Image (tube, rainbow, N blue to C red):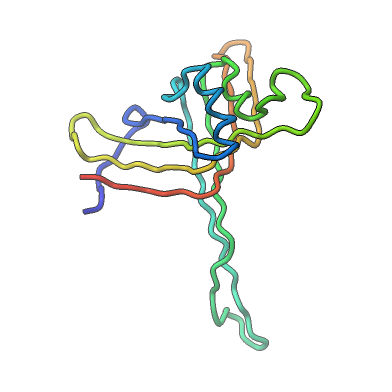
Length: 164
């Protein structure tokens, strides 16, 4: 049965886990050091799944004859009203502590976004982003507002699960 409930951001949560890979092991050390399984102070999470559609046009035809599937990309952004270095380290790995003398592994991790209304227990939607890598990290220090960080990421693929 599909989930037909509506949610607000206060119904959501964001958790991080590690895939079983060398990149996941690089992320595990950071997550353990910062105790960052559940990510707090998150705001404005955006996930974009883009599926290219390639039209085939025949000479003499104004409309496409066929639409073919193309590449799929999963990207997004995360805003966070908290700064402790964990996300920057997930972006840079070993390079966050200084310039390493050699090439290094960029950490990869999984993000699980879940929404569940406490008034309707057992009805939940979960979106899991697999093998996520942070593409950009931005720190903002406005004069009259909260200090925050923003990340832009890419994921290898996404899966979704509706319960209830």
